[in-house]
Length: 174
Ligand SMILES: C[S@@+](CC[C@H](N)C(=O)[O-])C[C@H]1O[C@@H](n2cnc3c(N)ncnc32)[C@H](O)[C@@H]1O
View 1 (cartoon, rainbow, N blue to C red):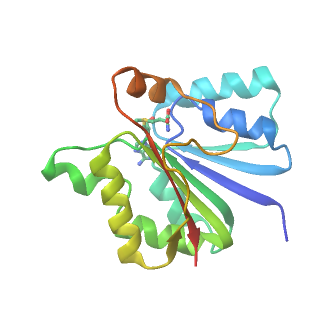
View 2: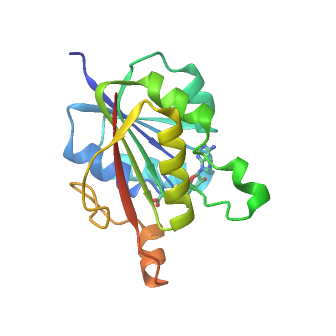
């Protein structure tokens, strides 16, 4: 097996990505983020912690999904994607049939897709889309429990402070 490669989509301030990269120097990380301030924050963190295993795609993560070769990732993290709550905006959600087709193509055998959200409707939406895709199995876990080696981002802290309960879903590629 070649080097392990994990992707985080929409890493925001990069807290979770930097945390995982520091814990796993043997893994190559890619972070995709469209928001310039977020990229700048992660760059500062990379410098401060002397991290050598993160590459950044500054722009739309979907461009990166198109460009990456088959089975080139072992994990994809999509944490607190923008909720787009209005019915007419839901088509803008990151979880969509095309994105899941890419995830399925990109994640190597036995790989995982990790999803977290504080929006129950988005959690249901994700389960439905994943089930329609048919190429993933939901790993049975306590969805109120964060993933292993978790670190709370500012975004998550705000959601919890405002009374929203996070759900953490893990899917295995079939
Ligand atoms: C609600 S924030 C969550 C940030 C972070 N994942 C966290 O949990 O703290 C969603 C992030 O996704 C980014 N984003 C939204 N659409 C994106 C896209 N198409 N490509 C890359 N990043 C995107 C936004 O800029 C924003 O930083």
